[in-house]
Amino acid sequence: MLSLKDARLFRQQAYINGQWLDADSGKTITVTNPATGAVLGTVPEMGEAETQHAIVAAQQAWTAWRDKTAKERGQIMRAWYQLIMANQDDLAVLMTAEQGKPLSESKGEISYGASFIEWFAEEAKRVYGDVIPASKQGQRIIVLKQPIGIVAAITPWNFPNAMITRKCAPALAVGCPVVIKPASQTPFSALALAELADRAGFPAGIINVLTGNSRAIGGEMTANPLVRKLSFTGSTETGKLLMQQCAGTVKKVSLELGGNAPFIVFDDADLDKAVSGAIASKYRNAGQTCVCANRLLIQSGIYEQFAEKLAVAVQQLTVGDGLKGETQQGPLIDMHAVEKVEAHIADAVSKGARVVCGGKRHALGNTFFEPTILANVTPAMRVAREETFGPVAPLFRFETEAEAIQMANDTEFGLAAYFYSRDLGRVWRVAEALEYGMVGINEGIISTEVAPFGGVKESGIGREGSKYGVDDFLEIKYLCMGGI
Ligand code: ADP
Image (cartoon, rainbow, N blue to C red; front, side, top):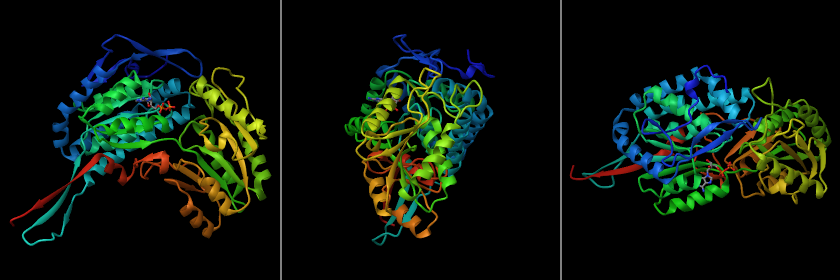
């Protein structure tokens, strides 16, 4: 059993219309701890009927929520934010238990997740309209911004808290109800958020969390005409499928999909800073984030030196169960993830890559994997094209700035990119040339609620966080008044 200060945060039922419910069928899904394989509990296996129930509840609750002032909604959101922060330790334990990340990372995610609620509770007060000079006498032209309507959110297991709050906080703040489907591997973090939302005083039907069959729930969310917007974070493959499904009812979509982040280190970089940036960007969450460095492009003059320094730092990473002492890397989410990492390493080695350190399953067993570095990696290897989503740093070699830019952009993805250089002219040139939605310059960690997170190309549509983050949940209405 998990030791929580407040045991009521561990909910094993779904939350619809202010009520805790089981599936109509009575069926459940089992949730396990990836560090130990132990069963943590179960959640309802819901489907189409329960999703309809949640959507109808959201529709009924919508008008009263929309008609509140931004300040009134903001006060409830603020209470939610405070409850999350007051229960940060318990929420972190729940997260590490179901997701595997080190406890310090879970705590960090709880405050990062909560920051979106605080931010958007404030930001919604500043959703301004416009008055446009009319083109005819006797007319006035006014632009209103109104909440889009019911928002469906489908979220992944790598950030079980923050991917929910980053979508729901702007939606709720501007006046939209939400229906959430968390990943089946990590539902307890989502249900704990619902419990705290209930205590914060959200009216019934405004926040709903459904667990269960992805296809059935996602199918209803995308087909139901009452849902006006889908916000999804997950794989590019599933994102494309959901986008197709949304075409039938022409829903607005926000998609945060896969990445293939380049991490470029130029000869003139501060090498120690580049190494610590690479460790943070690559090995955080065991390499399971969509903005993790996937390809390390190192200029030839410093290639060997960088590889040596990185190897020293990587060998100091402590791998282990985050609930049992200080660790820096937890297990991977499941065996499928381990097999993908192994396949990427085997493919690279068969084509001439050298394992600098790591390279195999960790002695701890289960889904633990050794932090790994591969040298002599080339664009012909799978690690160059596909997101590994694991603790593997493949080191590519390049000669010129132009070659680095060409290699960095040679992918269908365009989420995050990073580079290290101290040359001001190069910093501008490279930053402008990278075809990415976000660029870290001499920084390995770039996520914050105040900046717009999102990708270009097949990495997605829309931006989350920042003053831009409300736009995806608003419709523009133009009023033309005549006869004045
Ligand atoms: P991952 O590889 O991170 O599990 P997915 O894109 O498969 O990425 O999953 C992200 C989220 O999308 C999860 O909540 C998952 O249950 C959900 N999902 C997966 N397939 C579908 C689908 N066909 N329809 C709706 N949701 C889906």
